[in-house]
Length: 71
Image (cartoon, rainbow, N blue to C red; front, top):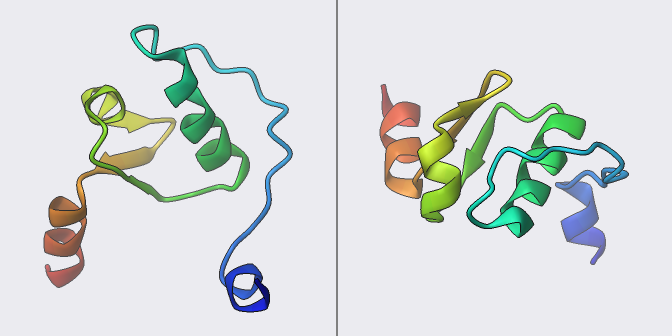
């Protein structure tokens, strides 16, 4: 747990976002990313991937993310 806490950030989860209506439980990932000031969300979830970008946060598959890192 100490190693995980070294590379992670806890967010309060207080923000209310209702963007993904097909699977509202996926909105928690947007909340976490916004509150944590993330640059990316890396996911294989189609509901998240369909959003594409949210408030400047790119939502990419792991493969897309690796390609972007290489360029």
